[in-house]
Image 1 (cartoon, rainbow, N blue to C red):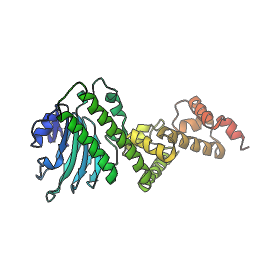
Image 2 (cartoon, rainbow, N blue to C red):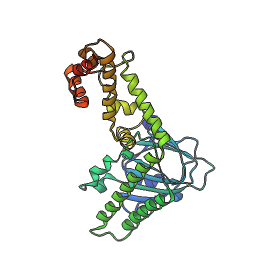
Image 3 (spheres, one colour):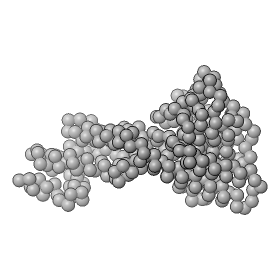
Image 4 (cartoon, rainbow, N blue to C red):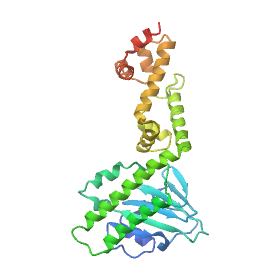
Length: 305
């Protein structure tokens, strides 16, 4: 997709204008009722890049939504979270006239000089490659909608010295609930999540195979996440829930497993094993091995003699 085919929206005012809405009541934050929006039902799907955070709760939508590497079917209570400078695309069903839900648009300038300005960047669900939208129960959906409406009511009221603080507090609470609901989703969608875990195990097995080492060096968390089409933060969050370990710990565990196999079943030297597994220096391999097993590679090998 070329940049010429992307609507780059620099402000929330431009977002309102694109959708045929009146100017926003606040230049840095807006809550939009999706039912009130003008929808582009032309033949070409519309790709958009915003310079602000977008939180969408879509209901009664039968179209497609593409974000990063993932395409979603809209369903009841589906939420997606988009950070600035990320491209998304909506393909509406032209026979769908009952679209509903809410859009919450937040410009980064609203968060300037607050703790949320940095904290919002740490939420894994804002990552470009996150591969799951958030599915909400009726109770969870009611909580989110109530917070969105509280934000709207606050900026539509007469602004005072406390308005910005109240709005940001409500926004942070919404993001905290989203974090909780994603954690619940990781636990309840075990089949999908364990499939990803199986793919991780297969990927690491293939990487450390002596016959298929296609590139030098150890696999990085970024490499593993890219290969699985998820973001590094998302992958580590999921693995923490499923196994209690981070992606880096999984990489190290697989590496030690392969090293043990070679130490007890081959005549390769420790240096040869280290280089074969991607280490530039054998001392680094020995240090990691001892930290994980409380034995040096040689001591481990000798225990089998």
